[in-house]
Length: 263
Image 1 (cartoon, rainbow, N blue to C red):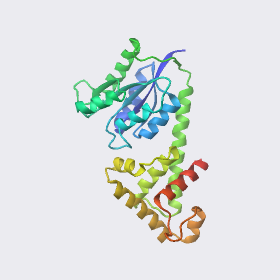
Image 2: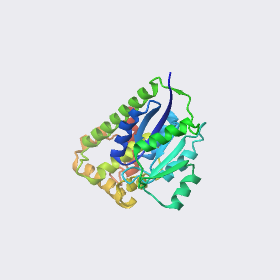
Image 3: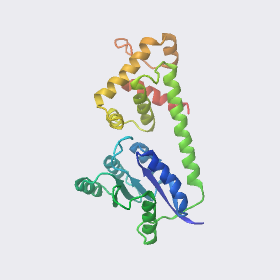
Image 4: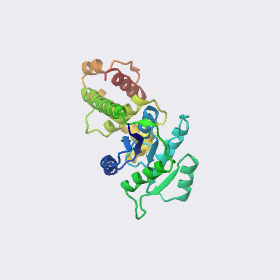
C-alpha cells in the first residue's frame, strides 16, 4: 500500500478551504483529513487523527479563536509525535511570526508573497516528505476517510438538532442571539470552556458584553412569548423562580447535554 501523509487545514476563508479540497486530488501521497475555521474543532481533529501536518492561518476573523491560541493548546496535548506546523497567514508582523515559531510553528508563508498559492503549499509539503522533514508511516487504507466522513455527518446532525431545539421554544433566526447561542451550544458539546463569550465575540467581531446581552435577550424573548406548556415540555431543567428564565450558562449547558444524548 502507498504511504501517505495526512494533514488538516485551519483556515477561515471558505474559498481557500475548497481550493485545498480540490487541489489535493493532484497529490497521491497527501490526504486532507479535514478543514475548519474553529480552533476547538481543530484540536479535536488533531487528537482524533494525529495528522502529520497542520496548515494553520493565524487570524481566523470568520472563525473561532486564532492561530496563536491554537498553538498554545496544541502544546498542552503532549502528542506522541508533533505534527509539522506550516503557517499560511496575511499577517506580516515579525513579532507575531516569532511568537508563532516560539510556540512550535515550523515554517511560515505570507499569503501576499508573489508565488503564494495553495498548490505551492502542497508542493512544499511533498518536498519536505522527500527530504525527510515530514515523515509518515500511515497506510492509505481508506479508514481515515471513513472516519472523517462519519465525523462530518455527526457534526451536521448536531447542528440540525440544535436548530430544531431552538425553533421548538421560539428562538427564531431573526434574533441576533440565536446564532451566538447555537455556536455556544455546539462548542460546549465538544468541550466546556470558560471563555465562551470571548470566542464567539471574536468570530462575529463583537464585544463580549454585546454577545452576552444578545444571548440573554434571545432567551428572555422565548420565555416571554412562548406558551408555558411548550417551554415546560422542551426545557425541563430547574429555573430559579426569582429570575424566571434560565441564565446563559444554564441554557447552554442544558442544550449541550440534551443534544449530545439525542444524536
